[in-house]
Image 1 (cartoon, one colour):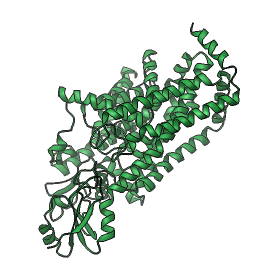
Image 2: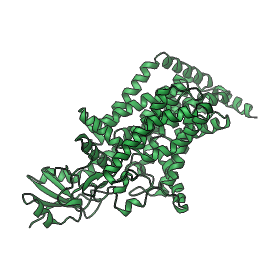
Image 3: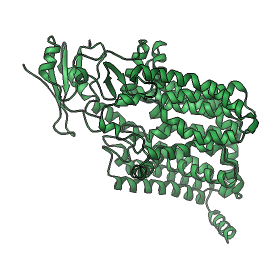
Image 4: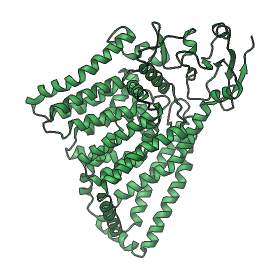
Amino acid sequence: MHADKFDVLLVERGWMSPRFRRLALLGLGIAFVIILPWLQKSLWLTPCPGRIAGHCAGPWDDLRWMFAIQTGLCIGLIAIGVAIISAGEADRTSGRTVSWIAARTNWCTALIVVASVLLPLSVAYFVLDRFPNSGDEYSYLFEAHTLAGFRLWETPPALGTDLIPFRTWIFESKWVSQYPPGWPMVLSAGLLLGIPAWMVNALLGGGSVVALSALCRRVGDQFAAIIAVALFTLTPFYVMNAASYFAHTFSSLLILSFCLCLLPGGETVRGYRLVAAGAIAGWLAMTRYFDVLPLLPAMLLWLALQRPAAWPRIIALMAAGFIPFLALLMIYHYQITGSPFRSAYFVIDNPEMSEIFVGLEPSRILNGVGVTVDRLVELASWTSPVLLIAYGICLVLKLRDRKLAFYDLIFPGFVLAYVAFADLGGNRYGPRYYFDAFPLMIVTIVSALPSVMARLERPIERAMLPLASITCLLFLLGTWPLVLTGFQRQVFSRQEPFRLVTQAVTGNAVVILDDTDGPGLHSWDLARNPPSMDAAVLYARAGADAAALRKAFPERSIWRFSRSDPKQPGELSRVTP
């Protein structure tokens, strides 16, 4: 019966000329690209673009319907495309494309790598305006500038916490960031080399794409690797994170490098590569403590595939690479917190933040399951539902065929581990806690394609693969204008106090920020001042006492930024004695 249905379908399509089919497919693609932005407006054109849930996101019920409809549109586009396209023509077109790319593999890879650097640089400069768009990002920059000055902390300002931004703290007379030093060390190295901080992540993104391409070529064919890496590079999830000051791009590069050190699986790995793998894991621990935990299942599977007699050598060499970074991290902890066993987060004295850390209580795990659903829906919106569906199919096929490799466990490991961290991440570019392992989704898809192809016996079935790639590309094409518009508006709105100060304030001044400009920012986020406190304009937190500011800075005028309605422009007024 199944074969008869396909035969009937092919006969009914026989009246379609090749030109008609191409025009029909073109019209279908254009309609998809037009409908998608209209459907996604409630997700992207908001004060906090791209958030499925959490503070200042759109109504979850509306976004749930949006996600379901856009997923249905993607599946429908593939199904209708398969119904229209000629099986023979699809095979011939795919064959020509494969041959063309195979003959220019190095050129295509080079083009993708260049794009992986230029796209985030362009977004960072023209859309994000090189602005640290969250308290987390500014805290990383603060710590990087401190380390670049060969210091571990700054001297607190005269009025203490009134003049410091969120995510930085005064702990035992030390003004410090709340984050571990791994990523700020990289940023500080860039600063010392004369590389602007806003460019560092984009350059590392190019390195991560090189590593991803190399890993995909090791586990799959070159054509699939190029297509998959190109789609990865074009996703807003990659570009926006690589255009930011977040640590996730660097963490993803470390994880990819870790996997490259341990390939090929099941064979004896040279000693220097084991030491390098241990050092990479150590630097990852210095960058994002929690990221080491989701790697453990993959590491254990890899170790189980080695000869038991080689286990002592492997563990010793990896420990030799890991321990120096662990020692350096413990020295940093001791210098900042007074104990090598207290994390950098120990300096936080805000109950609002301490309550969201990792916990294994049943209620928190249950909440974490709901947050995980939100993260996966966000991931589909920031990449494409097609990519997520393809990954799920490929992972199941590898599990059924008993071909799971250690790298296949990394992304599921992150999903499961972050169930215990029931927080979406505040200001973010997609589900950012998954970004560190996101490239491994691509690796799993590429490695599973031979198994997928073996199950697609008919040419018309094989046509689904290029149509899925095209649908993914069209999804990204329809999404990007909204992404750029949404974040440009957000940054412009958040910079309003600084614009008003530039227009109205002349000479030395202190501006009390009674309200952040718009939702999504903590009320302390924009109190951003240099440690020297010698800027022409200083910014104070909401609630700062004007009389105390005037006494501490008698030569400065005092101003107040306020906003009675979040949807209306703010006001800057001078505070008279």
